[in-house]
Image (cartoon, rainbow, N blue to C red; front, side):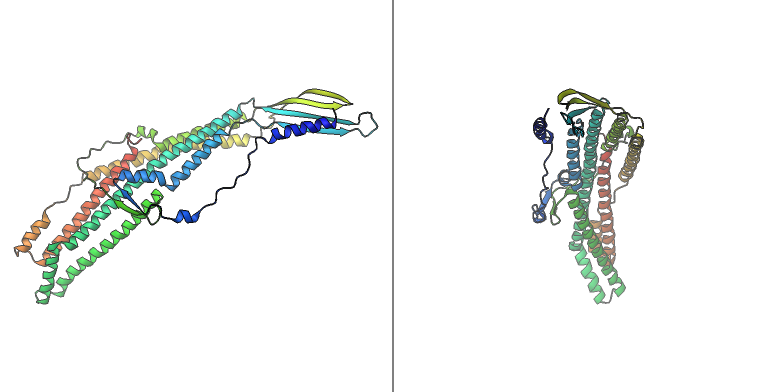
Length: 419
């Protein structure tokens, strides 16, 4: 076997050796100018469900999780391959005078995974992918619920603002305010009497400003949830019915084992189990075998080379201990998540039940006060004070309905229909 032979073997095997290599590709540059453009200057929502759908599509954290899940799927696909073959060359020259002073040889070794570690590793990668998918479902449920709650809050916030604006434009309020000012000028009301009216106006203006600030915060929160442009206008085109005669059903805590958050934890537990199995399988020897060719004293030789690892020191004891610890933590984590959901669902149920048992506020007082003012049986100051109390009660009523709607939406996260 001469040098030419080795040269041919080398150049023949080189393309095969590099055929599985992946070439580098640079990531696409970020076009900041394009991202900053307002492609959707406004969105019109016809229901809280619309808000949930929009958030499920555009939520930044969800899209990041989806990217991770896609990467996990690709990793699972590329996991479990055998180790690359090893190609060894050696050449020696006899120092003393000899007819054939060169000795050489080559061998190709394949690692045969007798322990099954490759298969276990692939299953572990697939379990990790499943955990990422379940994590997406859990996050989707949270995002959809939060989007609905935010839009419901915006809806009732707008109702309060409209109630304040309607109050200021009310003909009875305008007449009574003017009457109070005339009576003050006529000397029949003191400055204290008139300022009581002004203080009420001032308090209402402050409340309106606070509601406007709350609206801005809620809209920004929804833009963040839905991944919208900072300047996107949010328009609501729906009305919510008053929450009456709702029958609540207590949550069966055993059904919460089907909650996406618990399924995520169980998928992580499965992944940790397979990681532990993989580490344990790594203890066992792997067989390395392949053909051998060489030249000695001018004569060509062929044969087989074989080897096996001897796990005398069991170097992956640390890996096994860490994998076992991760498995135990994952198991406890799944139980703790289920317990947390049981506590949260019970608290949500009790809150919704308490809110529904609250009696509604009385109605019809405004018109009765109008008649008393027209009949001269109520002074303008008394009328304005009464109407202001009625307004505050109406705003509290709106807050009550908002709390019920929000609480029912929160409770839906734990029901069988949602799961």
